Structures are given as structure tokens and as C-alpha cells.
Image 1 (tube, rainbow, N blue to C red):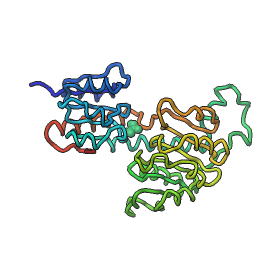
Image 2: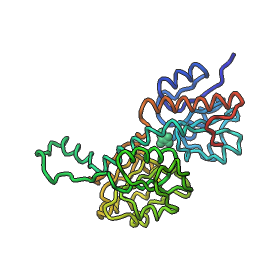
Image 3: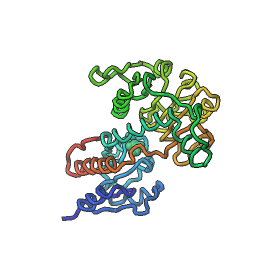
Image 4: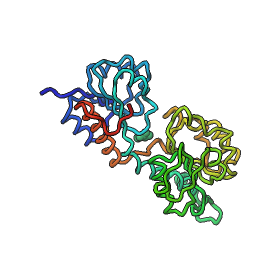
Length: 320
Ligand code: DGY
């Protein structure tokens, strides 16, 4: 029996590749370099399914040019702003994502950013590696404790809730802004704010955990940052384009924002150069889900979605 044809656009975890080779006629992008739109269209020709990542841009134009053989696009991510869902739906292509597999890993990086920014971890490491540390000093690299601080979570989906769960262990006072309030069992004492402005006004440490949508893009701009208390900390584990980089950099330079912790950026990997000059910035290279457990589960969930579509079943985590 011939196997369905699958394009895997990047080198995923060994367990994912093994299962894909077993069940599919696999075309793997061994070069592990993102395809250009034209390459993507060419390599997708004749394929039944595409297992893709956030580096693959499925604009309406790319989707319109996909071979009619393509029945499903399964993205190996929770973020899906790289796929024009309406265009896919119009072409009858199912799209699915991996919203569950990424939660714990991303929340852990969120907490690393919160701690790293509040405790000035990368400044300390840079000092040591520069051989510029002259021993313990009472007032060197003074940061902030987390207990009793107000953590403002912007976006209280699965990842926001997982951040809140960890913050409870640090005795933080949890506040959140979301499209709608959680029910009491899920909120577990976290205070709901019906507007972003209201959340920002009470926040000591902001954790951006909302998806990139037309409503959220650019929402953390100069006006929003000005609403935070002087000395606030800003962290981002969602998508870079929620933040206006120049405004955040200016707010840090002015001292209004004391520290930042970022894992995501606009235009990755060509991030705003101003970030490199900020001493009090804890910067990671989009590694929120970079743990083998998440990678294997993302692969499992993406392949489960593809299996389901090709078997005529509803994909477990469908977008359209
Ligand atoms: C996601 O899942 O959207 C992350 O950004 C990458 O894993």
C-alpha cells in the first residue's frame, strides 16, 4: 500500500521523524533552513500533508498556489499567525496546531525571564565572564524579590494560567487581562481586569502571554508602557510584535522600565539592534519550547492531526 506523502519543513525531534518515516512517504528538509515562499510551494507539490513551523509563511498568495494535493497543514507551534486561516479554509485545507504540548515549557521560560529580569541574572553572568567581578559587594546588582509583587499576566490562556500556577508558589499577587474572565476554579484567586490599561496600572511585573492578533499587535506601545508604574519589569513569552520595540527600548533607557526579559522579537532573528545595548535586558533566542519533552509532544500532536485528516476524521486540535 502506498503511504501518504508528507513534507516536513524542518528537522524535528528524532521521535517525530521516526514516526513520520514509519507512517508516511516523508520528504524531510534535511538542510533545516527555512524555505522561501517559492521553495515551499515547489516542495509541497504532490504532498498530502505539510508539517510546518512558525518560520514557514503561508500567506493567502502561498496558499492559493499550493498544489491541490495538499489536504492539511499541521503547524508545530501554538502560534499560528504565520498561516492565513481564512485562505486555507477557502481552499478546503485543514489547519491544526499544538496548543497543549507547549504549555509547561513556555511557562517555565516565562518564569525564567521573570526571575532573570528581577534578579539581573544575565548582567551577573556577563560581569563574571568579563572577569570584571571583584568579589561580593553589598550593593552590587541589586534586584527585586518576587513575593508580594503584582504579576500582571496579559493573556490568560493555557500558558498564562501555567505562569499563574508557578507564581502562586512565589507568593505573588496575580492579576490578569483576558478577553473574558476565567471561571473561579480556573482563576484560583487571580484578579481579572477588563482592560489592558487597568492591568498595567497595578502591575509590578508584566508577563505578555497573549497571541499575536490584529487586536494585540503593537498594543505594548509608549502609551501602554507609560501606564506601568515607574520601575516596572516587562517580560514577553508570546510574540515580539505585541511590543513596539522602539518604545520599549526608550522606556528602558529613560529608567521608567527597570528591567526586561524577552524570549520573542519582531522580525526574528534580525531583532531591533537597540536591545543589544541595554544592560538591564535578559534576552533569550525564542527558546520557550526548546525542551525534548515539548518537541516530542509537539511532533506527536502534529502527526495525530495529520493522521486524523487523512483518515477522514476531525483533527484533535484544529484551527480550521
Ligand atoms: C509556539 O509554539 O508558537 C512557539 O513560539 C514555538 O514553539
